[in-house]
Amino acid sequence: MRGRNGLLVAYDSLDVVVAIEINGSEMKKIVQGFGMLSVVAAATMSVPGQAAADDNLYGQYTLDVRGASYDWTMSPCADADPNGFIPCVRVSQSGGDLQPWAADAALSVGSWTLRVNRLDAIGCEDGSTHPGETTYSWDAVTGKGNVSVYNPGVCGGDPQTIGAYFDLIRK
Image 1: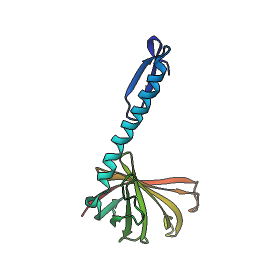
Image 2: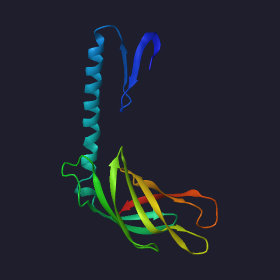
Image 3: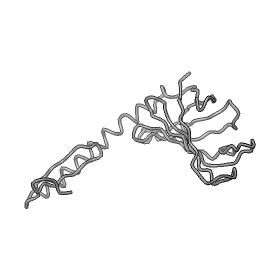
Image 4: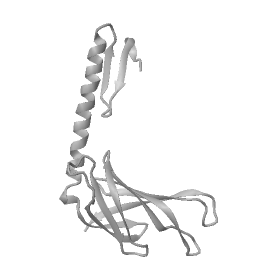
């Protein structure tokens, strides 16, 4: 976009502001500059992900959500990228009053995210449960996150997204 004084202003994925005056032969330098900026940004962003999916992440956790606790086990994904470019962990949940499940979580921009189709994702006031795709997302450093599922109105109310915050604590 155009900034002050006729300068071209662009933002890269690391929020670095680049201001370039466009005039004749400077265009080749602009393209080279943006190419190098992308390479540096990609290299910088892949390093934390490699460290986060190492053996230190694997183990036992407690998921605390709305006063209920569930056991989570994190282990390597079956088809994990051996280079660690796209970090992945296998999460298995057990304990509590919900059915056990397992799914793969992926790390992106400092947060882990997984989606799992659960048969008991939506609980109604009458005690019945219904299936739904549940999304868990949590901060890779703090373990604080949220869980959500879309309820299409199966409990008799209006369709809505149901969500809750949780804490993931290493045992």
